[in-house]
Length: 503
Image (cartoon, helix red, strand yellow):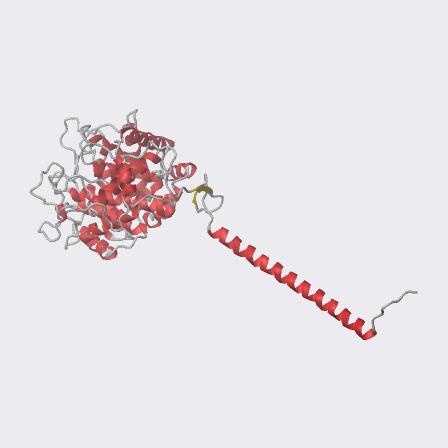
């Protein structure tokens, strides 16, 4: 006989209820655990996205838009080859000072200077990135910089603007010559190193060569770090010899090059170049603060002297000022500084459109076209292409300016400005000018990539504000090659926005 226990109906109902409650509770707990896991995974996913390695983009061949971009990874440490860094690079990279200067320098005594770099025939050249008005290139410089970085796009723009494949070949050959002649410390030449290094750097940047460029990256990086090191040591001042009263030329050229380097290498492509921003800010602000009360810039950065500066000096400073503006770095009084400078330039233009050196009358040995080109570009760069100054200046250039490589009319300084001003103006004026300078410039490049000396063949003095580019001695060959190279880059440094017929 066996005994069987049997639950009462009430007990069985309570047991079933407990089982249902337990099951529901388990399901709720499982759902909560799954939700928690999902939230954790989502947080991790978002965090990974934030920590993605940044990339930079450059236009792919023939691209006219932001589509189909070539992606290039950035080495945020900017590590160069072990054997590459020069002593100047090491000094710059080692500098971690919070202030704009790495090494304090005693106050500089500036005695009566040697005049071997001026005497009224001043050093100056300028290159520029076009104007925002008639030609419209400089105002859109970040776009223009990226657009010049594609070979096929450069060739397309060469063809559209009257250039040829030979122009591109000549530029590359010149850049290779610069690479071969660069000093170990990143500079060029034995004299006027700051200016000559800056000119070569501008030529590289004009071809979209940055610190990460395959063929020329070492040259670019070395040049930038050489200039940055000098700026950091000298409280933002840039020159070889501060006792030479003409050092304002070197400073403004170097500010132009450093600001352009920051905009292209750092702002556009995200490259990490130590102390570049600090150097641009210190050197650029010093230049702005040193403007003469009359609106120009003068020797020794004299701010209230009777001379008041000259249009040759002002041309470089206005270009450098615009380059500083494009960096996006904060500078004090940029707009006021530019307005005063353009007012100064306008005060030196005569009724013919010619611009004088320190007044409205060109010197007896000049026709006024050289400085007219300087003034025209200055106005174009600051959204003033429709102003009477550049219009009258370009009309004079169209009528009077000549270029004969072996003759008095071989002023590469003036023609470098004119090439920029005339492509900005566009139309028939540009077509005529392009025929004047392009083939002569190409025909006078030597096999090594440098450009042949200009001379007058005994027919008198070169009609120039400054003819330091004429010789093969010292920095003359380097200066001449830089000017000619940047003249041939004019086709893709600019983004013409309209075409005028002139008149």
